[in-house]
Length: 233
Ligand SMILES: [Zn+2]
Image (cartoon, rainbow, N blue to C red):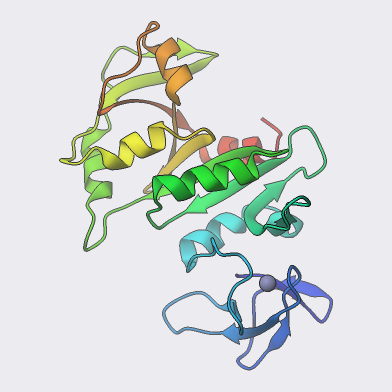
């Protein structure tokens, strides 16, 4: 986690050796100051959020787009006691209460579904999926090759969508996100794209579902994306 309350301020650690308590579980947090990554807090006895993943500059950069109070907000399911920390939560207690999950690492379909089931209880939910290539996965290359705004644009709900075809060998990545029940946005080299879900894709495609490997995208300016998480657009 990047933020914790220390001396009355919610912030990342500033110096080595700092300690404080986790606002969600009360567990001891110690400062971690890696040379090649962002400063963060580590639970001494293991993170109270089992979905917690290593975070880096991409997470920090996006969290900083939102008010400090909206970054890393702990939620508890009163019925089960299940506890998770939303990366960003704007408008808590209002009709536009929105959870933004920042997804840098690959997650299984099961975990994607579990997070959606948890966070959509009482909130809208947006995924922001970081699309890039690593030493082991070429998702960024495939996505880049697939981008195609040359086809006939389709207007739905005042948004302009383009239907394109996934150019990678495995269509697992795009198919997994097409099946999401929350709203899916991709961050590819700093550009934001909204992925049409199944129902919307049918409307875009004249009533017929898209075929395997086909997907519909709409470009979204970054500031508009941020405002929409904030419930302002
Ligand atoms: Zn904790």
